[in-house]
Image (cartoon, rainbow, N blue to C red; front, side, top):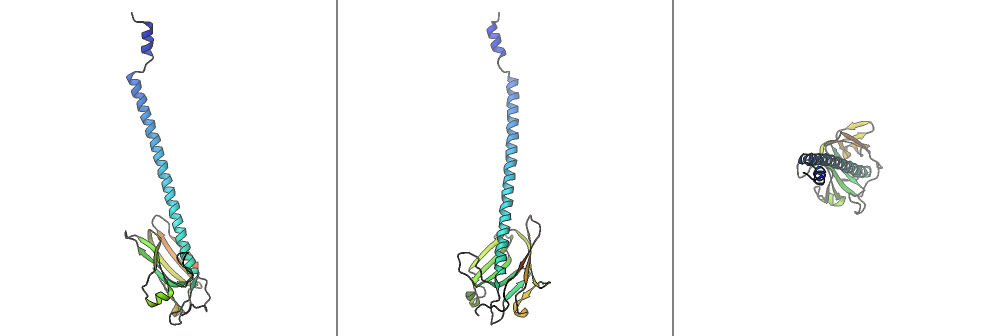
Length: 206
């Protein structure tokens, strides 16, 4: 005869099937939780990457805008200087690329270049203007201000007229504005219209 105590003790345990079902449900819930966490982390990463990309665009645009807005006529044999082409522009500016540098004048070149991986970049080159006159290829500071540039085009304004190139010696003045048409990887095309504030009779020491 089976003891009532033993019978009650056997009925209070879990069967092997019940344990397997419980373990399966636990594994399923763990997988669901891990997938949700992984998706959340990826979304946070994408958001952080997009924010960093937006910040880079804002900084790059600000650097280019402040340098062009402070462009100065300069002199090359007592003639104004500003050489604008579709994918690069050379000019004198009073503001340095790096804040700790002394005030200008500086010679700047902004251009469509390539990084070490062969991807397009918006780069700037700077040299103190007096040194630049001694050697036209001198570069003291070279800096990439925007990465992953798919296309870049500069155009130049004279009033409402838009030109593909600008030669200050021919025009005897600087352009009224510069339009930057730029497309970055994964971004919609952008246009920056940058006015140039400069007195036409204000030359740098020649």
